[in-house]
Amino acid sequence: MNIQLALDRYTIEEAIEIAKSTEGFIDWIEVGTSLIKEYGMVSVEKLKNAFPNKVIVADIKTIDNAYYEFDMCFRSGADVATVMGVSPAATINACIETAEKAGKRVMVDLLNTNDSQQKELFHYKQAIFCAHVSKDEQEIAGKQNIVTEQIYDPTVQLAVAGGITLDSIASFRELQPNVVIIGSAITKAKDKRLAAKQFKKVLLQWNGERKHENIR
Amino acid sequence: MNIQLALDRYTIEEAIEIAKSTEGFIDWIEVGTSLIKEYGMVSVEKLKNAFPNKVIVADIKTIDNAYYEFDMCFRSGADVATVMGVSPAATINACIETAEKAGKRVMVDLLNTNDSQQKELFHYKQAIFCAHVSKDEQEIAGKQNIVTEQIYDPTVQLAVAGGITLDSIASFRELQPNVVIIGSAITKAKDKRLAAKQFKKVLLQWNGERKHENIR
Figure 1 (spheres, each protein chain N blue to C red):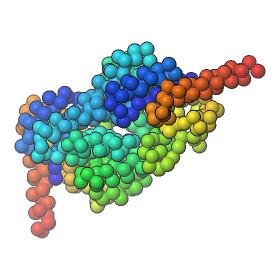
Figure 2 (figure 1 turned 90 degrees about the horizontal axis):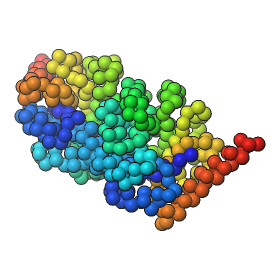
Figure 3 (figure 1 turned 135 degrees about the horizontal axis):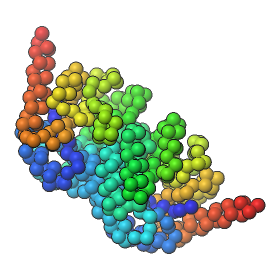
Figure 4 (figure 1 turned 180 degrees about the vertical axis):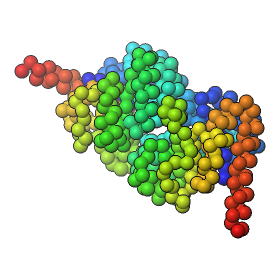
């Protein structure tokens, strides 16, 4: 189980600084969509250069032009790139293929997908699926990502995202996500290092409990 | 009726050069998604600086973080910014509000929207709706944007996009789109200026015929 630190609405330098202060407790680093759209691929390059041993996720939110965008992310140093699940099938396919050729990975953002779209998408066992409550849904509509009503296919790899806090993270334990994406609960914490450490502690505890359950 | 020149998969300098060679025959200039994601907001700034009297469309394809992304586009000189119609309602609303406050405009990309989503979206009479066959659908799935099966609400402002050529443009006449978005049929033409001139001629002819019809 990995913690993905989401870096959004920062300059590249601020993003690097925040990631540095939490480095020991996070696993994956997300170059947020806002960084990519504001600064371009140099944001991915600089984050990968600063953290060559971390998994770098380019949250490019591809919805068309899949080969071009994914190739550009991987050439810039991304290990994972994101595509919107609401994209046409041709786009999703091209992302999966481009990642496979590059030996990299795809995260499919399930934002606003319906049940039948999810059912189709879940055929891609090599992808990671991100159950995503968007920033706008959180900030404008007041929605939170706590255990969703959707039933996820237990055979797919899952990431969860959207305003997750130390209070709400417990609700995800049963889902056993592969990746827990944390943004402002770390980046806006007074002590970012401590916040990251606390999240890591929860995840390590889950891992321990699960091992124990398996033994029983 | 306006021609929007779509500039994608180029460097900023190439994009400016192409737009310059066709300047007399195009009305709107689209800073393509690939330029924004590759180079960031500097692509919008440089295109606006090069063409201060053209309408600059930032094809940012927002699907979250609406206020931040739209504000960034408008501050960089965009006159129009795009949002995906498949976004959550909170996002579309925030784009409309941000544009209204800035005295700018929203183009809603209808890519992969269904009938009920379109019905909801068409309440926004101030927006322009882009009937969009994506690059991937054209290049991978072989789909073309000729007259679509969908019936558009005649009270909304419409743009059409997706592999439109001098051969296929005729099929859009009945739809009376406000904006016809042309990419490779101009940018990949041997004589780009001539290609742009020919498209402009078709649109001027449509305008003339329509005036004539009204007089009758």
